[in-house]
Length: 354
Image (cartoon, rainbow, N blue to C red; front, side, top):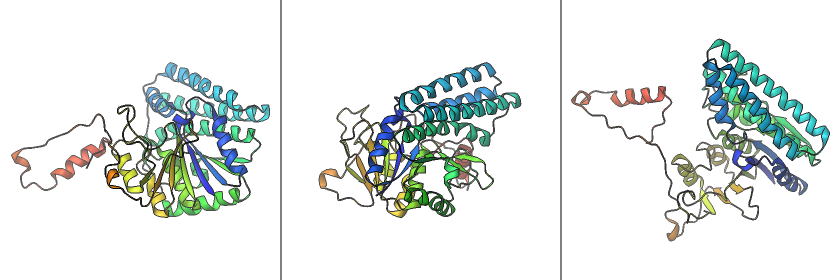
């Protein structure tokens, strides 16, 4: 089987990349062709965003403290997950180089007092770069052959909509297939940064929050994978948020359409856009719990057999939603009013629920 495995920040929350590596090794030694996609460590992307804005305000002391904290945060999983001193030192060196690059970028923002969407995307990309090197080292440590890629290196080409870039799928599929398929046929495991793409001019872009899911399904569609596996810290898609509804149950099987709607309307397990590439190529997506390997999770496929008892599969909740009523005689017969409202909200990057 050809399997794309995406490991999210919550599945790596305890810093144990060895668990990830063992899963990859088990399947690789069975003869499966594996591609790995990695998210940033939990909370890192949020902190990168926060401190890019601190840098814009000129707060160099806070930026330097953040850099130190970030280095310590990544030192722990390196020591915990990689035994071989050669691989451990190689990963330490690469992580140090990346953190030094980040410090230079944030220092530049401090002195310029400016943070463009382009430079913010560049800052946000560092979380995945750091964690992916650790995953690469943990896999190498188990005697497997692997190769590190950023999303752009792997072939994911996007438009220039920084912060929420759209992949140019036709070109991307060709590039990803050309670059990755020869490796997996040789038994080499590509280990790829999620969330990150690149423009035609070489600028780094991000695919929106949770975009590592999107990276995984884009790669899955490009190589015609048998399945895409999303590894997280829950058993799969649930009938409700278990933090709110204690009796929530695992949904063993849902359609692409159902899973997309659940993601759009509050389910936190999947990125809303992630299922589009899989749906286009009819590739099953499986959501699994890295801490409960006995559970096969939720399978997301084209069509499911619906029993009468399963007509309502799930209930979702969206928090912090504002309802705005616009009224007045001046709106009567005035074309373009709704377009103006949508334009104002769009300029502020506010999503509208339709």
